[in-house]
Length: 300
Image: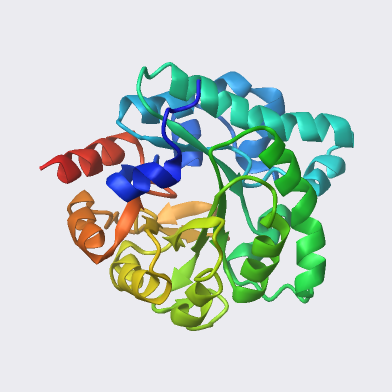
């Protein structure tokens, strides 16, 4: 069941709550995500786990569910021997799983199909560096088939997310142009720059004149970095801002474990809202309890 309003219409009227990190919820459910396909493996091996994870966020008050397609690509599935037709069906299935979980909530829940960066497919950490050595045209050719498959599945939006640099942002916007589905563009950042080192004002400006883009912002970053970035995105683009940072813990790639304490504070949502944020939630290690607290902070 689709919501009666479009997501763009909702953003014009209110601040909308996103979900949190899908992977941490799946781990809490006992899933093993050590595979290179990460949570995308479960599209084939455990779709019921993905639907259960989405449902946990609906119960917590999330109004937008981001699909499990972040690391799902034709190339990644091909390395596992999955035929192209089947891979396309798995991509479409990610939208259906989120749609079913949202419909069970008996209220408006939108579905955003996740389109992760090229580096996510490589599974080597380069998604947080960008600068892959590919041209914008090459990146566009990589992203286009997946975007077309996800758009055909009928999500309410495409989440062009965790984008590390402006070349990939340009490629994603080109690949999504004309697909018939609105998009949001969110960068992974460090301070006031993209992960590749470009000034955020320049990065956000790429989407300023794009009518298909309904929100611009940041995700998968330190909560403190989000504070100033929201204002930059709003002032540069004049569009609603999307913001969903990590918990604040750090990922140790060598030990494959999280370190440090969480700094995600749902009370921050009020300052984000004042600066122009209209889509707010969490990314890695932000769970349903955090999203429930974030929603409660907005309701005060």
